[in-house]
Length: 213
Image (tube, rainbow, N blue to C red; front, top):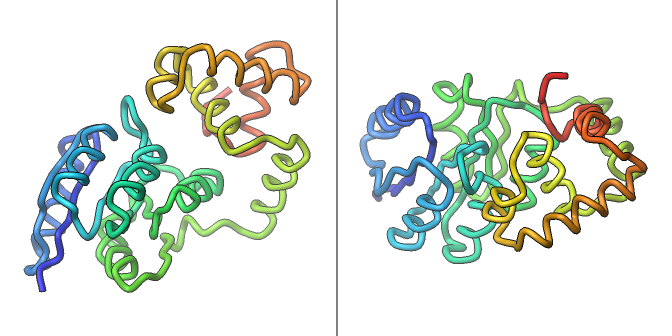
């Protein structure tokens, strides 16, 4: 039986490498390629692939939001996340959004086929080198739980510290610019932070972003 696959990554050369890997499987067929989350969602709705391989970090709509939307419009499509980061936060966000597997980009050649096969079986897969230790998970979970941030607040925080403007965040999350500003104010209040530098420091400590200080 032919396995239909959608590939979404904004790096063309990397996506071409993934395409070669998929085609080597013989009975796997690429039914679409996208360079951003919005295009991936549109293709998923039109082509209904069995598997969608999504880069977590894409311009415009990121892989987390794209995963949420694809699972809503094409629930039969299994999502395999691709990321440069083994960060527990990104894994949690992708799995919460509906992903079945999480593969590190530098392990894609070794892990992607296995991840897709696991997703098709209804199993969860994480690249071995991305599996967090109990200590790491406990530290980050405690930090986030202590601050009592909602999933949406965490997502807004991540985009803010990555340097996204209010309008960009609004477009990525499909909310109004006014709502983004409301989230920003709520974050400052909950965290007891009154400047952007401290906001970035908190995000790094909590594992929300890998931004270098």
